[in-house]
Amino acid sequence: MKIAILPGDGIGTEIVAEAVRVLQVLDLRFEMEEAKVGGAAYEAHGHPLPDATLKLAQAADAVLFGAVGDWKYDTLERSLRPEQAILGLRKHLGLFANFRPAICYEQLTHASSLKPELVAGLDILIIRELTGDIYFGQPRGRRTAVDGHFPGALEAFDTMRYSKPEIERIAHVAFQAARKRNKRVTSVDKANVLETFQLWKDVVTEVSAQYPDVALDHMYVDNAAMQLVKAPKKFDVVVTGNMFGDILSDEAAMLTGSIGMLPSASLNANNQGLYEPSHGSAPDIAGKGVANPLATILSAAMMLRFSLQQPEAADRIESAVRAVLASGYRTPDIWSEGTQKVGTREMGDAVVAAITGKTITK
Ligand code: IPM
Ligand code: MN
Image (cartoon, rainbow, N blue to C red; front, side, top):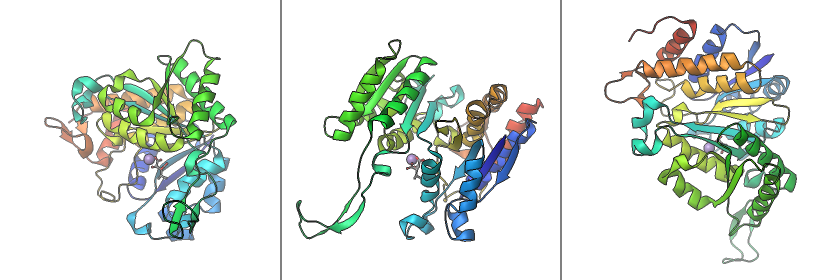
């Protein structure tokens, strides 16, 4: 088994280093190989997703990804910006199914911006379609408007589109995931306005006939955004398109106290996967040793479970994270009165200690 390690930019290098240490102490038989991606790759090789990096990712059983991006690249032409690395990996590896669990750990109930009773015990799963929608639809670009409110003016346009098979396959992923959970799927759309999402709704409804044991409901995305902060625990599995999923998963992440806690998995049809924290490269805190590595460490656990068939090792990581939280360790993003503030490295040390069975001393 081979894992491609792509730390990327900003806090990516710091948090991936901790996840790699955690993987190493598990003493499993796999090979890890590192490559540059994002802004770091642009600096070194002139492209955010160099051929060698893409080939390494394609040949690997799984990819552990940190984060990409920095404000200093905002003025580069789009094809050279760091974000193109992750979009390119999703596209070239066909990673259409993005799992973003939002779990509120008992010890962090008070770190949420919502009232504790609204989030205590929260465990929802957002499944975001990741290779279609307005993110990848063609044509896109700029042109002179020939109609609309300002004919003759400069305009920009993107194309929102989904094909029936694209919707079918993500719907199957959602219903199958729900079967292993509370057997409820909420499909989020904007069918009241958009043709793309009328098809989405129709196809998800059609697929649901094959899953009579799973309850399906439909929700418009604006209402879903509201319900997520009003009564988040009413959701089980949420399935939606690429752009709505991008937005709702950030919202759901915050319910759990910190986006620094949330892992994600992006899978293709062969269960090859890319695993990354749900958060970004956080250039404002990069290099300071304060970033929370737990989302990346938990992403490594998802990788062991989904792509590397090592569920026991995944369990060991997840219990270690719970133990570390229970013993009061907190990076600044999840710190509260009465807990101990630690940095990235110390948090990694604590998880390693919990796995190897050494006692953690505060
Ligand atoms: C995410 C990110 C990406 C996205 C960016 C970096 C392209 O926000 O993974 O959610 O929009 O998908
Ligand atoms: Mn996002």
